[in-house]
Image (cartoon, rainbow, N blue to C red; front, side, top):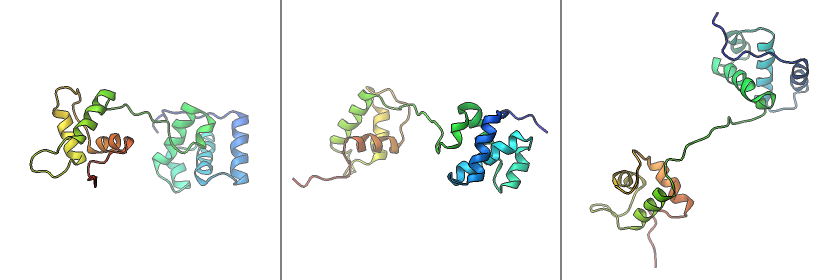
Amino acid sequence: MPREKYGVKLTPEERQELNHLVSSGQAKARALTRARILLKVDEGWGDEAISRALDGGIATVQSPRRRFVEEGLQAIHNRKPNRQYLRKLDGKAEAHLIALASSPPPDGHTRWASRLLAEKLVTLEEVEVDSLSPETARQVLKKTSFSPGDVSSG
């Protein structure tokens, strides 16, 4: 059996808190499942045995184990992991994107689409970006309440 990367050893206080949480049944179902997983891991159960016992996948067992080791006991209550995304565009590039969206569309197009804006921004020499998804372009424009598809009625 392979050695587990994230070993869980509960303190008596943590074990008592988890047992109380499970026995009261007053928490959300996900938190209860995570608590059961941590209790089983502490008892020496393997990931496969826990996943079979709780009718879940291996990732369902491994994720709470990892989050407990990294974040502590409060991680069983957190719905989403702490993710940090790096921004693709800085303020200067966003300004170029907005200016581009305000300009007339290229020949053969009646309006700017997010895909066209993303492709054009990548080709500009003033902006240093290797690639840009249409979704990123859309989100930048959404922050400014600017929509490339809107046609002014005035």
